[in-house]
Image 1 (cartoon, rainbow, N blue to C red):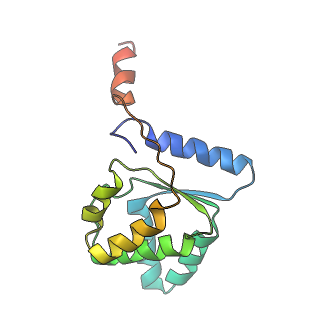
Image 2 (image 1 turned 90 degrees about the horizontal axis):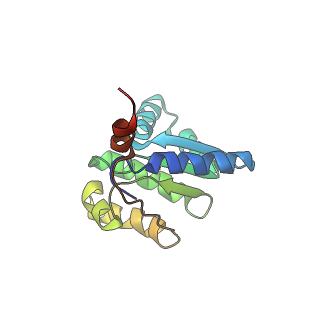
Length: 143
């Protein structure tokens, strides 16, 4: 968890590379891309197949976690993914928001509670503080 530019995605991917080098199946996806994939799968009749694929992955890295508020169908689809993975694999959530802010982003209180309940009880939280590294990198680059 951390502000924009604190390298949450970089850390998540580094952990993913390490897991992959240790022969753990790993998948990285931005949350908006996951929803697009699930919407297409639902339309093509392969939704359950996609859910099973995400269920099998040992480490799933979800970037841009709840950056935008969810529609009801997105919240429902997210619950399907979280439920399918519960107790079966690890998931990294790269987020700018604390868990208490997730409820508002998910929207439906019951679904939000179900999602958060499956995530937070066995979670480790890493908080990244500091200025945006993009800003810092720009200030030290030669002109």
